[in-house]
Length: 260
Ligand code: LIP
Image 1 (cartoon, rainbow, N blue to C red):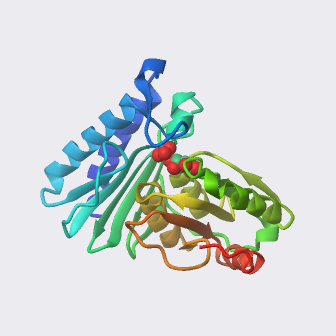
Image 2 (cartoon, rainbow, N blue to C red):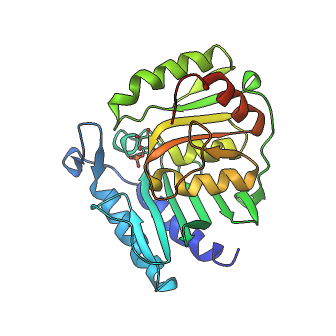
């Protein structure tokens, strides 16, 4: 991949910064609500990533989670979550990542998700495959019944909790077990790495899913909205990722639930 060495250096540097952080209470603020946390580290990492990337991509716009970023009106842009799994980060849960995607004319061209705690770098380039620490990823297809699935609880959208937990129970009766990690980007990468057969979350923002969606698709996963519709890159929406059979099993199980 043309830029992979530069991107790897930039995300590894940002990852080391959060891995070695010791977040103090006074460094934690709330955004849209009591659960929507942000730390001074989120803001600092976003600023660092924007600054580093601008050197290599001088025409690119930047669309990030922090500081009220809005979609740029440039043909190419970076979609960045400086710390995906911020709540985990504030409690030193050690399951968070740097998530970065580069899109041109609304289509993601390459992406990277870096977990500094496990030193796992997931990367993908459109049409050129997905990799974990340089090893090619290929999703192992299997039904939901033979799968662990991952649920995202959409804590910033409490109005979705009823449906989220109805789905949790329905799937629980049709799968091996479930997991809830707190990092959507890593959830998508874990589907790409066949560590889970399926992942759903009823509301995510573009910076949560942009990078992991390309990694999942390039590894052979099917990634759509929860009703099977295509992902709209710059919109908040539900996300469903899965091995092809597990993805179809999810859609069949939930077809009468009016998901969107
Ligand atoms: C988080 C996601 C997580 C989701 C949370 C939040 P953040 O991203 O990774 O899966 O459940 O609502 O969106 O806010 O930590 O970057």
